[in-house]
Amino acid sequence: MIRTLPQSGLYKIAFRFYVVLFYIFLFAPLIITCLLAFNDSSFPALPWKGFSLDWFLANGPDRVGLFHDRSNLSSIVVSAQTAFWVSLFSVVVGTMGAFLFEQEDFPGKQGLYFLALTPLVIPGVILGISILLTANSLGIYFEDNFGLDVPFLRPSFWLVVLGQFSFITTFVLLVVSARLKKFDRSLEEAALNLGASRFEVIRYITLPFLRPALIGSGAVAFLMSFENFNTTLFLVGSETTLPINLYLQVRDGSTPIINAVSFLLIVSTSTIALINLLLSNRKS
Figure 1: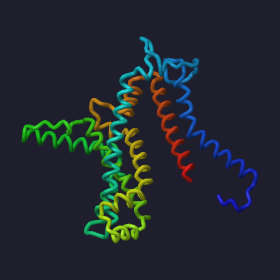
Figure 2: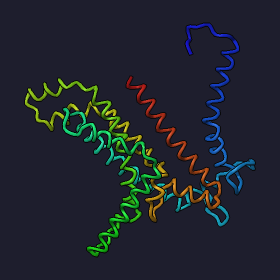
Figure 3: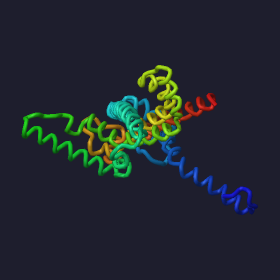
Figure 4: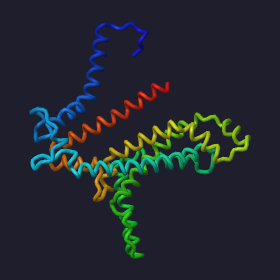
């Protein structure tokens, strides 16, 4: 839309109507889910039967609220632990990869960069199946030839971490690389000329410059890992993550406790985003 051109009244009405519909489409499902978390009904759907906190606090034989549901609470903890390790490994390896690809041309640089981006275009289902088959094949090989039982090569917590790490690292690599391209190399050269070691230059000059990209990519990596479903579905073991646990509950028929979980996630992520926005405005 070119704002300098004259606009008819009908066009303005249609444009505003479109904007309203767009945001209704985005937020209506979230609002309904949050409201149903307080619905005094045994089914996670309409109609509305009154306000209730049972799906958060109840601990009786008929209803068990979220704060007394060990299955959902443990899955939240597992998702948080998985996201922590995935984001940590992704930021470290992604940053190292960004440093590598910012070096002068070396043999095979373009090919390696293309391979580094490949996990982003591979469907998560294919990636999860591929990692699972590879791990199972290696596990069978070690067991048949060396008599070794490697728990890591079976569906487990660390196999989920590996599967998510394999594609989330690429995102961190892109974000840090974009930030690194704006770095003024003369700052490093000045520090080296003044007697600083290469490690001191990276610690006191380069990394502080990359701090916004590291924090931002780490936060997004955490969220991507926390909500990942496609890849995790094939690699998860007895310790299920929250998305897998919610899927199993919906498949088998669940109570409105899934709405309570969704409500807490929506509120927590919105609060974090709001705090980040306020801090950014204050710094500005």
